Image (cartoon, rainbow over all chains, first blue to last red; front, side, top):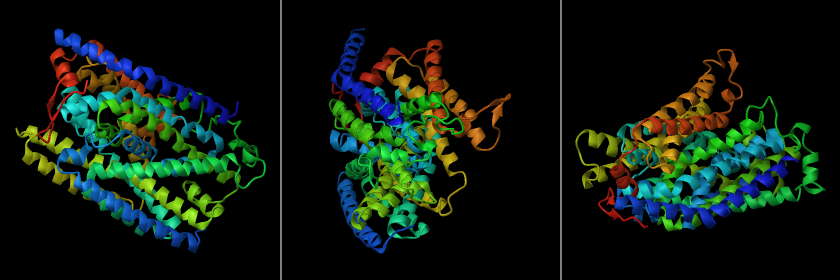
Length: 43
Length: 524
């Protein structure tokens, strides 16, 4: 593989991570934060 | 420089237009700046599109248009490992901390990243330590002013010494009036233009501009050491091996902690816009460094220049019509200015907010939220903006010998010191104040030993072990600093009393008064 091909692969991986984060993980973090707030509020 | 009269004439016309635009945006910002908090953060003032472009433009800095293409002109395709790997680190860093910075920072009324650390850990000592390290960002301002001076020289035919004062005049035109509001809106416009220019450069590269045979012809016309099948070079500290390239990625995760970047998170309207902001910034931020391909193209074309950093403007002047070359040159100048402005605001806030409002006033028993203190802090912000700009320009009338070393005390020092408290402290609410201070000191100390000491000429090995490539590679050294700071903070939190539950609830879920008397409610 040449430098440009390696960079193409890393860039595609990066955008996959960005897509998964935006699509799913941000919401999961938000839900976890809300759960913790409720739990500690009860505590 | 091969600047033609036509380029200079068009260049001045575009500059005049640019000045009118930024003066207008400065006025726009001034109308929105009534309080110290407005000046320091433009809190809640921007939507995701403007802030996304502004963030990408600020991260990219003059180095994306000058330093990185210069690196590619010298080293060929392998410079792409810097150009396209640093943004991956920098934007993954945002994922981890942007939301929590916005949420906690709004609730506590934090006005800068050192202030955020102080508020997050309820630690005036940590705020003070972070402020003092951040003061070295003044050298980063200086490096941007130097870059602007050379752009004036290259595109507008203006003497360097006059150029740096002209750059200062442009900055003060809108910063003293509009503070962060003016900083962000001008950066957003500049960011959008920069993306356009990068797409042009990318197209020039893909078509093999100046060659028959496209990209392969570009590669064939490079020296063998610059061609795309050469990945590493053991004599080159930046690309010595795959490990230091990986560290370059790691170090830039911590780049998000830079005060002139982190303070942008406060400006977004609410955490519900975070996803869209991140998406715009992540795409624009990954596009801009493609500019390195302009340096590769310049090297392949055999353009001869004494200063590699000027390859992009020289490439424009040599291969494009004068009117386009002049427009692109002024746009690059605006890109440099767009990083300098955010830095100046951040350095000014160290004096106005971190040292005066949140350290000196409470130490004297005063109330940092009182209207009188806020008005004084706003005045200090404006005066400090002017003073910081003038000091930076005066200092680079003859560029100081160790400018880049001092600059990297700031950039690398901030990454190495802040990363543990900022990242571990954001991801793990129970992280204690003591653990944060341990991480801060350990990260900075290791970075200083492996990079700053050798750079200052004090030593180049320890107990017989050579410090190369760390001694000459600030990115890899920052990567080590990042790891040490995060691991020390994490381990420190295992052996110290965790942050009390009531303090955590107040910091992470409370509602508090803002410094200007307003209240921020949690948007959950």
